[in-house]
Length: 599
Image (cartoon, rainbow, N blue to C red; front, side, top):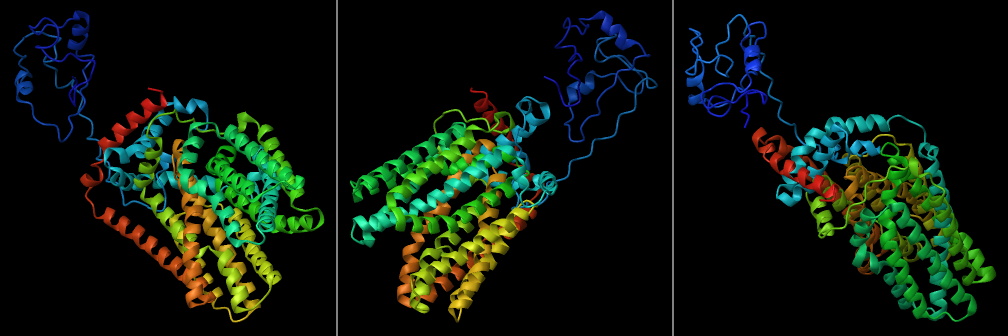
């Protein structure tokens, strides 16, 4: 065993090496050590090294040069001339204590990705992966929150590097320079338009088959979202376990087949309400796997630098299709009926499949698939629980989605009950909100800096204030005008939150974390809708918008206050307290290395 100030290649003393009498087992080496022309260097003792009496007694007297008790030259205890003995080097400086955590930015070492296959075996990248694994599984060791706080301060420099890379510029559409992403985005434009067309046609078909029953329409919508609430987190496990490109091909084929079946049933005249129920539930099951896989596949196409831009352009294509799809569907339904609309949507999935097939695999940056093991879903939940920065983002998005983003209900109620307009006026109001959302997505695409928690809090405050003011609009036209900046703020916080979460997680955890994010974002909205409807019925339609805005403001203030408090509490801790979780980090890093190696 080598002590703190011994070199591993030196003999350990008379009682452990050689002939028990203190003789060296290597005479030639002993002679070389005894020569004054080749002085033996000794590493300076650490300042805090304990004093060892037995070892001190065995060393020669420094003042007289008296040999040790063995009297044999070439042993560890031989006298060394003062002139030949080099002066001890300077004491290495004590590393500074880590600073207060920046809860706005995740651990940079944790989120560093291996851009090339050789990165997993390189020494420097292996060190980064150890830190990543430590943070990823620190919650399992009981030090999750302490570890997240302890490592948050150390990632500041790495996050700045990412910010500088992201600040390289390139314009609003810079991620489209990537050929794979161009293919993907083109397919999404076609597919999203077809999806919005099917939504309108499906609602119209249900109303036609159920003789205008609102209950049947609600059941159809509920069945389509029910799989997300029941199995949403398992979709993230699948996204992490298998190659995302292959998973997306399977989900796109399955959704295309479901649309084809519904179209054939509608054209043949044999469609019944229960058929729509079953197919809507099947579409929801496919979406459970498609959503986290699609969200986490973007970074594999464009890399970390262009991820915020790619997310914003994805949102832009979605909202552009939201404007175009319903309008086209309305014209087609009036001309040829609902059946052909479903067939058009089934064909639109072919654009996505072609884009996925035509991608160049060597230009992708895929994360290594996670090997099948027990407890992977719980592992993802523990990972998020041990990351305060992710928890704050999820809490903020959950409250905003539950109470502040029910515009399909609140805009309809205000347009009808307050301004006494017809369906066309409600459609115009929805279009104005979509125009704002599209503008917000394009503005977000121009942003080159990495999103931070302070941006989410600030935009959440602006969004809540604009929503409350919109609910107090005195006229219909002022109501329409205020919907545009409200839509801009809504899309800004949605794209920023998505990018923050994706950039803040380890690659092997991204699918499960994004599944939880989509569950919070999509699952809380139906939960808050009944409460918003009840408030509108009790206190008026304006109250639904005003209260939703106020809840968004309070949630943003609370998240900002929690982030500031946790940072302040961390700053008051001692260096020893902040470093207490390091052994847990090292143990977790070793465990993750074994998992990655298949052991």
